[in-house]
Image (tube, rainbow, N blue to C red; front, side, top):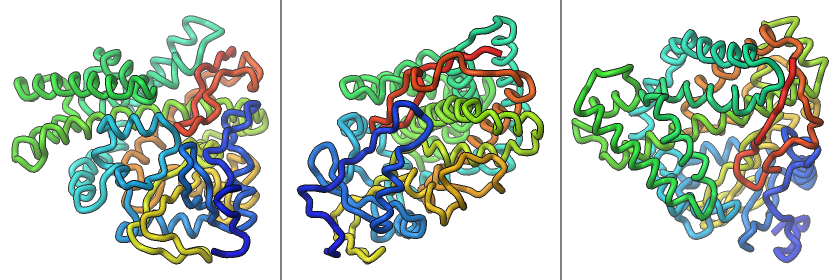
Length: 408
């Protein structure tokens, strides 16, 4: 062990809470950890230790190495961030896509990727614009104040994912309520069962009446894989569940936190209003700066020499999203929030074979939402001081705002 590595007894704790005064800004401790090198040992809530990766080059190496690194959460030293993750894993939610390794992952991913191609995603642009305009129309009709989280940031991704999957949005309470309960430890198993039963009923309905309503990814998987025996019904339910939950919760939080970041930086908000051409760069900068996901978890299944250290077989690994996104190798002057930067992809969608399949769709939703807000609500401002807004202060799950009261 290199001399600058502290003994296990005094390892820093992880995850690192965000500063309560600024919920969209990760703690500077992520960056400080990199001062002693791009990798360090940390201690988790349950006493286990893991390697924390904060360097961009090392993160790319780990996330690209599917031969010596596993994403399966059932390894003994898989680095879970809190009790909530334990319950989610036990519920079976992570048994597809982002919880499995090749060749299983490769087979499942190939089934869904046609719907997430750049061309197919672009075809949803008019629908997404209609959805965003409809929510903004409702806010304008109601008049200020309004809660941007419940009236825009939550319904827009939910409606978009319903469209993509072929899930009737009129059923939204049947999937939104259990989705919100999924990350409450004592409710995770119940939530998975509720969501699974709903999706099972939906699949049965689609099988009995193919072609009814607008077809989506679930219809494709039924026709092309379930009926041909290349996909089990249980896999289909879990894939639909993963898409529905991951595709709504993440985008909701980036919309709300990103809007707050823009409003807290008036010069950036003014620049976006003055030049809509900055929208793609603004979306990338928000994704980087907010660094929504605390860390990407892996387990070494063989020894790995990296960054002056040896990660031993069986040791847990966490790629710090904030640590890597604030590496100067990603962008110069990383501590500043600047939407004028040339757009450069960050690690917010991960990297390698497990890179988020919906990154094109998420970017499109963000761009349309921020462009529409800047054009139609140019005088938008937060009604509460940022340090008084309710958030989860990053408990290891996705960072989120519970409210964003605004006026215009």
